Image (spheres, rainbow, N blue to C red):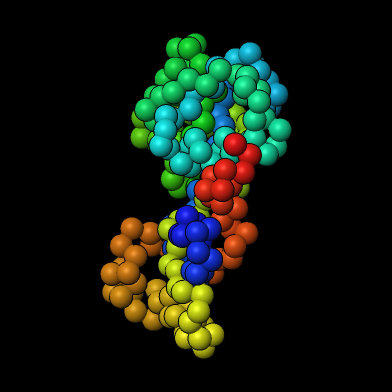
Length: 210
């Protein structure tokens, strides 16, 4: 959606699905051991940050673009970046002393003690047993990366746009079978979104901060 929007300005997002805890999307999160030396972004200089390799979007492109805008775009500002296949592998490097922090992702919704509803924290705590919640410090979080939106053409009549939007926003309550057919993966219904919700992805597409 963001790529097409930047290319033609001919589409707009009307709704995104929520997960079971109500999350509209996910966030990049920078994780470090609670008792470790990395307590802020500036502590990464001279250390090792495990980052999922390209073409990872939420755990690489989005956070690196946003952090560049925040003043951490120069080589070495985030320490040495070490490519990993996924955030869990990155945390294993942290446990082995081969990295000081890892870039992961999270919904940041739901029960914090279990690592929230979705994401790296949940994988580490609930699915792999590699950590407990008190073992991990969330050093930094990105702007939201929304779930995949439903989009419409910008040149549609306003009345039709509103009809489509209202249909999606009400769908879970009016016809659960139709909702499951339209959105089989995320069960929390649809919510309205606007351009500001896609800033994190827009920075990646436009190269802002790179």
